Image (cartoon, rainbow, N blue to C red):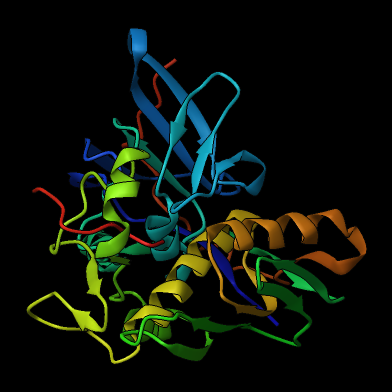
Length: 317
């Protein structure tokens, strides 16, 4: 199994939007980054003009209720990171500095497709260092509130087996299996939007969630009806979005995974629990490196400055 060279962006790109839960505006600037730096967030605009660097690692996950939040002991945090992380992981981009001036990653249209388009607009370059990856060698499983998630060994690649089961007749029971690569991610996963139920909205508003949710960035479900006038992008868009979330959440392993991830009734909490369980069993995985990378291929890394509507429903991520 060879994952080849590490990659980064060819140039910086700017993305603007609002948070689905906070409704706060935010600007993202994706910068090229050096080899072996991974995905790192630079949270600016903190009180007193402070700034903090937060690595996209499972150890920095602070909250998993309806979205994934990373933060540190000093109180800096960024929520709803999963869709951006899914785009980076799905397109196999290893090293990026994500500069963000607000508390929540913009929701865009509720999927990862706008992040994919932004990345495509500047392009990706290979770097002169081999990619490291995490290979599952022993099964690890966690169970939570009627659902489960497990990592299983595989000889090559990353297979994602996701099954959901909702009482709502608009969703029901859906299952998809993906052998993940950039083409599959673009075609089958990236455009799947977050979704939520009209019946949940008041309680979520009181809890401070879904303040920026709308038909422009979520699929709304009322009983057995889809309220979005354009309908669904895929007949099984709901399970595909749960797969998208899993791709983003599992990227917090810090390296591409070689193995099978199988999950029933998943969510951000279950994905985080699965990673925690994996890292608690050191004999269950190996950290390996691709045998070689073309030394002549170098990325020109620059431009990264690192200083000292009224919602009718709620997202069910």
